[in-house]
Image (cartoon, rainbow, N blue to C red; front, side, top):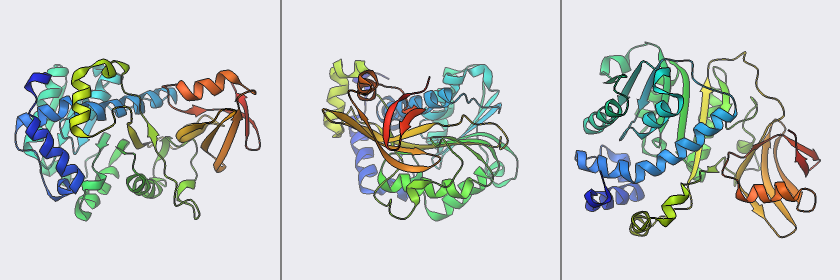
Length: 327
């Protein structure tokens, strides 16, 4: 696929469906051309979100123990390809894909086979979905606002069979809070890997925090801003190429594994003002607005404005004042 090969009418139709809610009414893929054009553009942007999630999991010292991967609601299969590439194809021996569209299953399976020739790739059978067989690493991506109640019930049952789950969604208020509510359901059976830095109930969902939501921003590759093709795509799609909000949840069954202590996760973006920076901080004590005076730590002040890394820190602080970062 190249920019010259893009099926622009298909991309326009898909974008309209995502915006008006038609995507929730059933399969929207009409051809392999739809999927290839989507994978090259919108799918690539989703891939950048997965890249940032995977960087955070590495920062937390986590990697999957499972040899098998199941990409549920796979679409073009971008999530599975990013995950397998990040951890290494040698980490896994099989990939299964599932989507309510057979065309999507075929595209995702073919793309994964081309990317990882030694990997056993197949589409999930209805029998497997209905069984109680164990699931290894379960990947879920950008499906929550498309799921009818029956499908969400089936997905819950699949999660109950999984060894580990990585679930990435758009970083909107409603979707993030819905994912947070599901987090509470999964807590008794799973260890929370990220974005949480603790195993307590989500403070975002506490009374009084209704305006807050757990979301983050992935950095797009800097080179796209010098690409006339990406600029044209952004203008036609009506999207800001600089903004990639996402929310996510990473879980596994290692309930007794020790987690790093004292970590904090910044929610959203730091707010920079001339004399200070303000952040919405989440840690084991709950949500809190913290401030860092520029004169206290000029290097950290600048880093919080420019870093492309996940915003996970171990603060030195007094009350709501950040004094620095522990090394």
